[in-house]
Image (tube, rainbow, N blue to C red):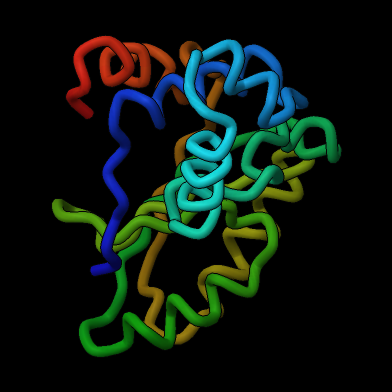
Length: 162
């Protein structure tokens, strides 16, 4: 498991300020947050050097690339073939998240597709991967609540607890 840098109150305040103005300069952030410019600079460097801040592409809506359909696919994997299956699945661009899970499925995938025909192609491709035994697909009809972390950041910014 990778070491994960834990955000403190100031880190959370910096990220919230960047949510409000992604192009804010270090000087502007320092003035807004009432801390030294060097402090903001050091904090941003530490955040970007750690796995805390993810790439800008994570903010992109797949629909802007023509992938209007989102599905969640549960996979059952033959024991002892997990690494080989994951290596193959990782090469399919439409698979945008892979989670190892407990329960009935071994792996949960978040998949994007252009339409149901494209999703059919992608799920059939998954079945050609070594060790993949079966799939169970659920199509997302509507994203009711997108990923949200702002309230957790606000809590961390206010009371210092992540």
